[in-house]
Image 1: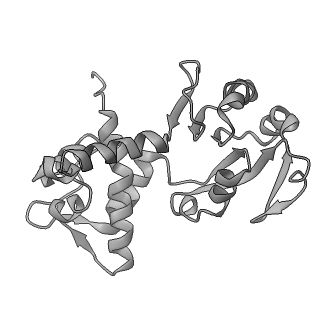
Image 2 (image 1 turned 135 degrees about the vertical axis):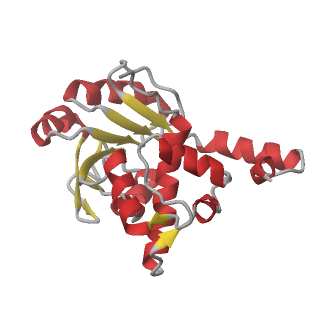
Image 3 (image 1 turned 120 degrees about the vertical axis):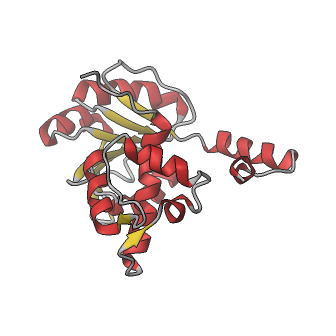
Length: 216
């Protein structure tokens, strides 16, 4: 049987559905409709049903989706039904903010080690995470068998740091550095370009519309 290729946007939206489901579960909801799942995500109920259909038949017509069951299914699809150890490279202002961010735990991610090249920061403990000398990256990541890294270093150091992480065995990178990075095909990368996102917002302000208008 030919494997179905799932659109990247559908995979991205799974995390949004999961967040909505977690809110609903905390509020005591037992079932949810596709209309409710679509709220605040700028998609239609039909898109929700289509996205979920790539991964299985989870709902019941006229009843909707069981909240706890769908949370479990989406976590399994995303690989969030287990804990993921993450390394953070760069503990400047942005890196420090990331260490403080509580949202990682919601999805099963834990920053277990952080690296920096500033002697004043090396050896300090931040949110129970000890900051290590960045020269030790390759050795420590191999030893701890970490597969996910967050990069929050200046653009000038980003590519060299990425090469080091890949040699150490990192297979997935969340890049906050303001540049695009060259990586091999067997490594996944997501770049968070804050300036670009602000540029997108400026477009909607300039043209007097919102992203939600596209789905109204």
